[in-house]
Image (tube, rainbow, N blue to C red; front, side, top):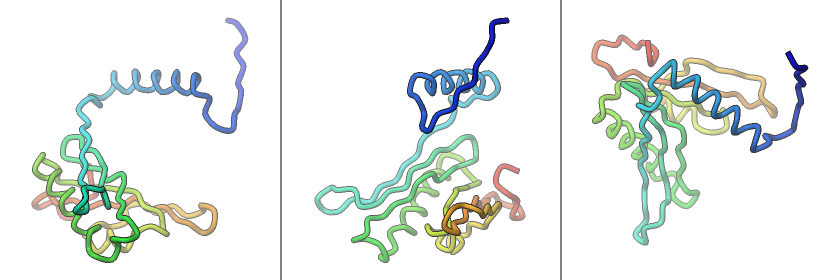
Length: 151
């Protein structure tokens, strides 16, 4: 066997990263039908049609992940975040989702999500500047008894 070498980098060299992405994608495709994952989105637009907020995520089976939520500074504090989440969840529920999850950082919105019924499933501390990261979820399945999403 020819000798192998290991190299380290700050950053991700595009060519090498593409090989890793492809290899992992091929492996995952053999193990799980990830082609079934579907993207979901919900947006708020102003009267000129400009996006002033949005929720982006994906679903797979009954699970739905909120990946990004944003409302422009000028439109915060008006309930748009709540309305976006509710519309995003309804859209996902219409497609069969009953379990919802997300990750948020301590300076973002954990208390906001708790008000919407999410609970902390995993908390990780130790990030720089005292920041924590939270994996949060809620299960809306009838009779789910508050089980963690996906269980």
